[in-house]
Image 1 (spheres, rainbow, N blue to C red):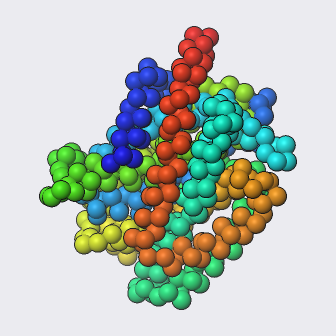
Image 2: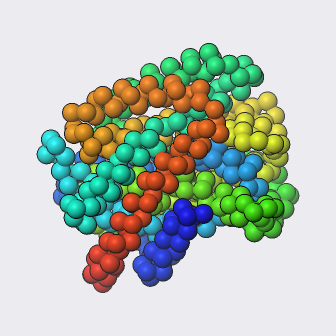
Image 3: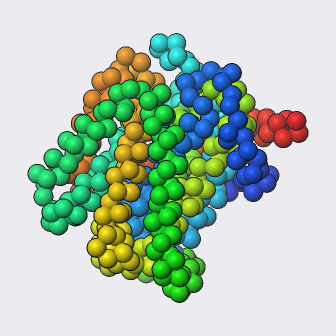
Length: 424
């Protein structure tokens, strides 16, 4: 509940305080996305920053995260994922702007951006303990435990149909080797892969789910009716609100779009964009794609195909639903999407963790972190799902506290810059 109030309430504040920028300037955001600006300090372009940030959010959370939300909170959880997408766009606008507005230098003299630098450069050095707090939990939250776990779950379900720890370990080792090829090349290689991978995978997923919708068009109105009718249902008992569709939908959406968590600011902080507000506009596109478009596609496919969940099963629910809608091929086609989505996130998350390591221990420590990150992919592959969800949600919650406090304190700076930019 505190996290819900902080992120959803804070996002609502940003939406109103910005003058409803996501609604008024979404077209402008799409326009400036393709504008090339290499005059600022950074390592990648704004487009590469956005696609890399989306690569981290349009991942397993967009498939297994939606399935988990449906199994825990029912169809109504999807409505609150939509609400989170809207307020998340406003939050990302402030994140992207401040990430470019306040940059710092690491131990090697390289210009860096992200929540930790927004804190030290924007709020002052006396706030550094809060930056350290953010970075410590950032190391945990960005270990890709969810991605490795659910990818191993999917492969196990498809190929051997029964759980096997040894098989999961083997899958984890394969994941580790494949991810190492990209992440050991640093942010430039990660961004190049993401900028090509993201548009292709979102388009392919749209076509796959589009086929399911078109072939089951008669039940689509009933699916939307179910989402809206269950949006305000609460579980019985004292903990009813905490277990409601509202809280569960918001929790999973936060994991998907990461608005206010602070991860996206690390990627947008690497942009060469010299105009902070323009980077903010680019950043706000993200939630409309991940927790808006892609999560809706997943929810529709699962609700159309039907699912049977008595416990938190994640990716198994999605595989079952796709198989129901597309006999024989359904779960194999989704498996391809799962592999691509999971790897795209693991590539980007490694950069986030490396950035936190850089801030805490210096640039030389990054290579050691990368090895640790790769090892944890194997650990994540065999970790129980419920335990993994608890670890990741807790880490994201603890990252969100310093991130949102920083955004709220520095919001007037964004407001002032936006007035000048839009006036110009």
